[in-house]
Each structure stands twice: as structure tokens, then as C-alpha cells.
Amino acid sequence: MPAIADLMAEHATLVDQVGFPASIVTLGAEGWNTVDEAHTRTPSCLHPIN
Image (tube, one colour):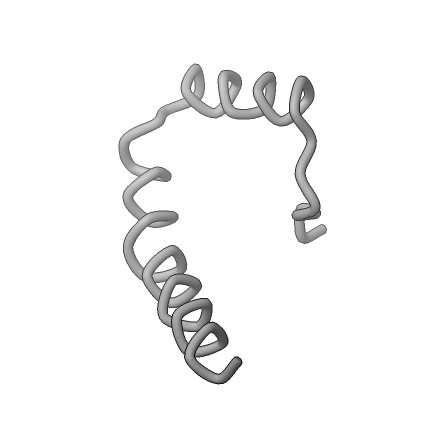
């Protein structure tokens, strides 16, 4: 199990440091609307931070 936990931690770090900041810059308002619509159609176990 430690190997899986390490992979998950690495993935989370990459999303936090690379994926999310890049999406903020590239998606724009309309892109985020598309993301919101997709989340509405297919909810995930991830919850937004309020």
C-alpha cells in the first residue's frame, strides 16, 4: 500500500502545482462554465472548498 499512497501524493502535488494553476489561466470564464456543467452531469466524490 505505501507505493499507492506515494503515487497518490505525487499526483496530488502535480495537480496542485501544475494542473490547477494552468487551468486557471487557460480555461477562462466559458471554460469554467463547461467544467461546472460536466460536474453537474457527472458528480464526483470531490467537494469544492468553500
